[in-house]
Image (tube, rainbow, N blue to C red; front, side, top):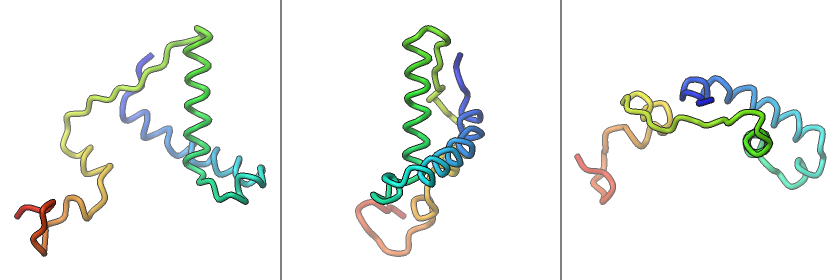
Amino acid sequence: MTLSPWMAVALALPVLLCGEQIVRRVRLLNRFNIPEPVIGGLLVALLVLAANLSGVCALRFETGVSQRWWTWLICTPSEWAPCRMPSPTCRP
């Protein structure tokens, strides 16, 4: 089963909320300031690994995106905003 980029974006919120609940309940994670997205993503990665290794289902994420608006979706505004000062990374 291949998950589309839209499905990955749609699953991001439940993964984040799941990570938040885990960090709230496990005080050690909260004490060492482990971010919620890291815990949620690690949990999903382990679940996908377990599903692939056990043969229950083969999950894959589609990584090839050709539309320009995906770049806008994942980049911070400073990366696509016009440059005000000349620098090696910013070309007018």
